[in-house]
Image 1 (cartoon, rainbow, N blue to C red):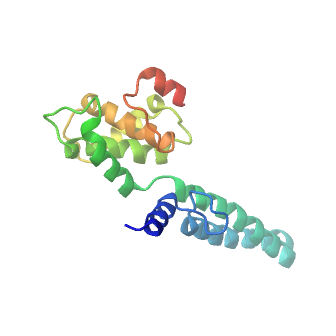
Image 2: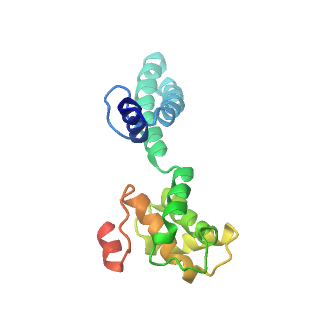
Length: 178
């Protein structure tokens, strides 16, 4: 592989903003958020202040919607998370030789999807755990929650820390991450 190919791949992996070069660009999420909120802002502005309100409402709505869309685009990529845990499952301290990744997959999924769903309003794993367990069970889980809880916590923490999970995750490390 040539150096330019490696640099291009690294740039794609960082998902760089095309203008600023900052990592974590989510143009689709940003665009969708901006368009939707811009239209809503225009409608509210028209109702409140007529034609001038339409223009001001559209701009304010687009900026706010773009920000919200960017944040939503940053939340998680379930495909990437699944691939990460599939590759790293066997290295986890809670992974047993008699159980496969596929048996733990619903727990990982409950953790990373659960953080995206519950993490803003419930920033600790412990507080979100009843919801995560319910999600885990709804994914057709076969293993008892008590056996896979640490896998769900690891996936939650990985997303919470923006992909910098520390394994093994002790109770003390979890408290410091929140």
